[in-house]
Length: 356
Image: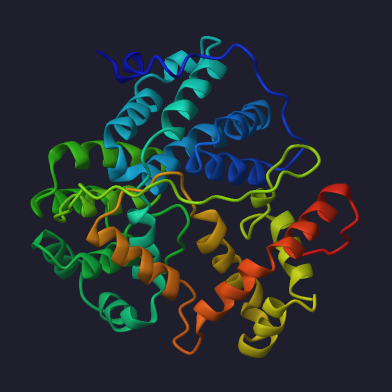
């Protein structure tokens, strides 16, 4: 039986919400964060917006969400979405785009989330304590990198290697990347189940992002899945047009304009950034901090020792600066969300004149 047939609680909806008049970047942000929070109403309106304006971004984003937000938390659902968007693309060409989008969004919304792959990638790419490992990875040969990937254990070291030389549509390289098939072969030899490698590789071919490789890498690690967290406490504010305020983040021009204005306020957070962070990095680090607090919140998270450790590494090292005590800024930002959301409302109503 197809996995879709097992979820009668997720019927196809005939009603299609009115699209927002926002950029695709804002719509993608709303879609992904709503799925993380199991807010199907918001997620479907965001999907409707993308389907009306840039359908390829919708399908690519849903695939990205599989590996960034669901991963090992509900890999059977990841498998079903990947297979649907890989081999079932013909269904999207038969007037079934909205019903397909509705089904996939519903499937991902209710899934238990595991953001370990993204946390692993952030830690490997940015954490100050892994600077030495990144330096070494840049200097060893590709043959040596592949050999290390085939060895058991060393999760963080392997993640650093993959981050350094895996082909990615986001990464500009001065030297050619190694063929991705060699990386997948090495991951197979390291002990990852063929199921995880096959599905993750299919997701990688569609997204050209590194996170599917991180999911396959995590599948090699021993995990205690018996500890499941209770739903996390989630807060969100809806703007006048029904758009959640969290859609304006550091990954869109609109969100960056909000953060730039926020940094000019007299809030405790803005003062901290002016005192502790050089001007050229304030916007990027504030955007990263906002994501760690607001953007990575999920409804139900799979908990195990590896996941908890990786989340802590990403929370405290995403900025890459050993001199910054980011926990202080996190406390201040949580207290200043009302001001930030006021600025987001001003952007929506046209009262914010900040440019980026």
